[in-house]
Length: 307
Ligand code: GLV
Ligand code: MG
Image (cartoon, rainbow, N blue to C red; front, side):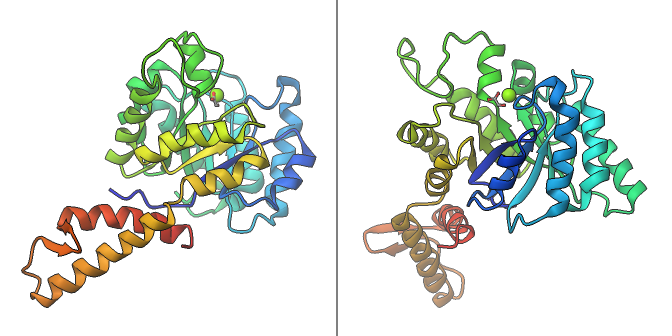
């Protein structure tokens, strides 16, 4: 299924405690910005960060970017105040709330109901603000189907590799990188599990951060793995990673051109046959209804990327 929705090839993390970075993020070519109130912000800095984030959203100037705020997770004392202050203060300038360390559908249901309460109280359109659910521990992964289906507001399922690796006692400090002692890709199961839950509910699937911000080749290598599976985008922690993400999560020009060719050829031959023809030849390649669907996925990603 093609998970349509807002563009999210590159999702830029911006600490809510840094006025300088909040300001700079406006002009960067990321598809999405998420203004962070969670792990990028120290506990004592959280109240000020909430105010910065509200001011930055109200001020606007984000162009066509998807505007998201990451609140603190529901095991902390901060979540409700994050949501109330940000949505009351700048709900009209916000597209989604990102909830980290989601462990069960009830976490999403709590956020859904809270958003509905605030939207009603303020006279905002009920249901417009979406939810991005970050999966960062075993409970989240085991419950991911229910989490993805917990509310129509859920737009994305996001992998949080650093917290995830810590929570399952993974013996590696290199986030997202292959582990020499393990003969395979240690993230394959997790990524596929997230992708299946996301697609079952027609949501986007987003890969998490790569911490070696100066190693853009390393970023590309990790990004290419999730892009190959069908992930829609990846977090970026530094402006230097944005272009790489936009490129890796867009189809290659050659694949995009071929997808459009398949769509045209299939349409042409089947309409010539009054819609009765099944498989047809395109050069040496046999194409049928399934080829049309595959081509549609690539073409949709390419069109969304302005190809
Ligand atoms: C992101 O939040 C991560 O834990 O990787
Ligand atoms: Mg995390």
